[in-house]
Length: 107
Image (cartoon, rainbow, N blue to C red; front, side):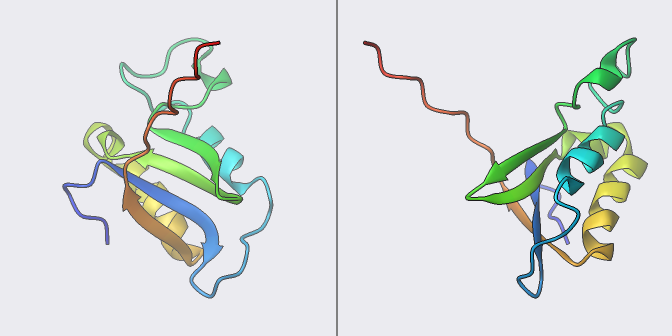
């Protein structure tokens, strides 16, 4: 269960049993399906980029999808879809906050 106060959830490509989830491009596929859900709604050409509310990434060598809770407020059925995807595939889900990369040191 995801708490209502959490800002982001990380769906990890690791099952509850610790096995790597397949196929290897599952995160990109899931984020691609969610690409039209974005602030202000879908616009022409927006299917060519990921939604800022559903971003595939790799953390510590594990494929993940970072899902922002704003998606829950904008489109509850889309939120339910990604959460149920994780549940149906027995994937680990962690509530967290994705921090921006630190600035590069100046030369």
